[in-house]
Length: 108
Image 1 (cartoon, rainbow, N blue to C red):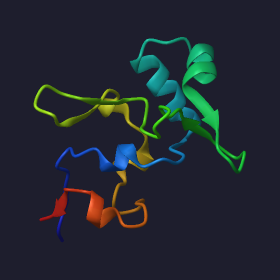
Image 2: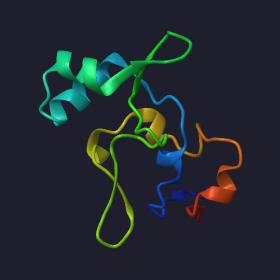
Image 3: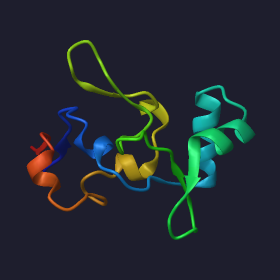
């Protein structure tokens, strides 16, 4: 079975849309960032358009607010150690239309 190898291009983090969070993920991310839960909920999450979930906030350009770029120009997830399962599941269980053309990662 081939495994997806991420190239850290950040295409998946730049694609606008909801990153659905579980209650457990909310607690873990807030703790990892050392932010009180109420502050994290108020300032770093939004309700998804279907009003069924919480989602991470996006920057004005649609990028995940936790996307950064390192000195080599590679994308860096500021919450990598505790990133949501939806992010971990890219591209196998979650992806976006045309992701293969935008993502520099590959199955090996």
